[in-house]
Amino acid sequence: MGMKQYPAEFEADAVALYRSRPGATIKSVAGDLGVNTGTLRNWVRAADGRRPGSHSTQPAASQAGGDDVQAELDAARNRIRELEKERDILCKAARYFANGDALANRCQFVEDHQRRHGVKRLCDILGLASSSFSYWRRTAAPRAARQTVEAGLAARTGKIHQDSDGAYGAPRTTAELRDEGGPVVNHKRVARIMRSLGLGGVRLRRRHRTTLADPATANAPDLIGHDFTAAVVNTKYVGDITYLPVSGSKPLYLATVIDLASRRPAGWAIADHMRAELVIDALAAAEQTRGSPDGAILHTDHGSPYASRAFAEICRSADVQQSIGAIGSSADNATAESFNATFKRETLKGRKAWSSEREARLDAFRWLTRYNTRRRHSRLGQRSPLAYENDPHPAATTLTRAA
Image (cartoon, rainbow, N blue to C red; front, side):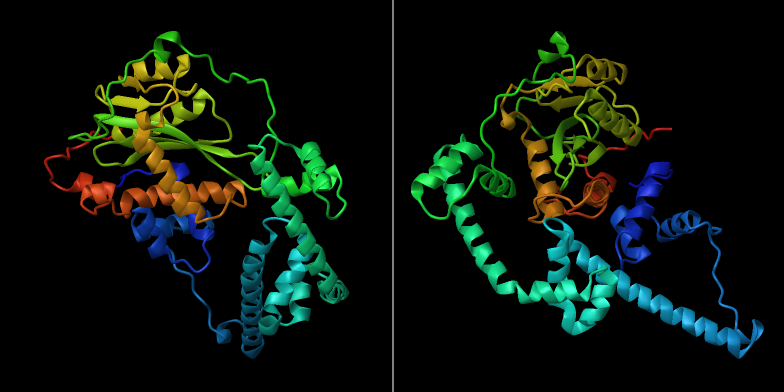
């Protein structure tokens, strides 16, 4: 049940998703997003400044000056092919630059791909001096020895941190390492190793309130009682927030509103904060998709954005009944927790974080849209949420679309 009118943000994200996937066809991306292939093609052409529906033409060499023009065209094509090869090389190299020393990662990339592309060409593309690569290669043995020592320290550091129940920071861990004997270390080196392992000591920090809770909303009843099912769409929803880790940057936050009948994420929003505006935007997106909620229940956890006065007022104006689970109980919002876990497992695929904010946003956009249009759900008889809603099933109903 795709939208007939697409928001400008959806069109822009669709074009950005297509451009971010080298080798993907318009047809495959359109299928993932549940839009017509011609529609996506027109969006791409419009973004390129061409008239939708137009076709590029290649004038014959004879019409533009004969053999000289043909030679220029051939040279241009060869240059394009070279640039495409360089682009492919850089795309592969980008995975080497997610963490750590960029120079070492460049050298490692040249080492791994030199047989196929040659050292000189790779060094030129990566902006790496051939002498630097030669030096890196010559010093491989002592560097490997240092890495072995570093790995041993990392293992000992991890064990000490675990034995302290995660309480020790760099100073106490350094003292433990010195008492155990072995290589002489200082707290700065230990701190660097702990950062690389994602370890840190317990620190008491003052909590900052980002929203003002409404006492009446904070005591809103639990209207679903662990019954995360619905016979008719647009009657019961769950909402939740999950964080999206980004390497070298502050995390993003994804708020979703999921229909319990079809398991469809009817609305979502992404921001770099967890204020009430985030969940309000997600509810507004769901209202745009569904139209009037007609008194539907929205069940959430006890997080401060959902317990804020601003969110309570939006729910009242949208004719949404708020339902809030118990404090500190993930089982009271199990469906949303499970959805978030699936989202991260299938988008990160074992990685710890996204390489950039743009990559995280595009991955979320693609996965959430594809989840609705193509991903099969066991609870829905191996159908996608949209296929389930479009099927003349007794549990499905006709939805009122937003104007």
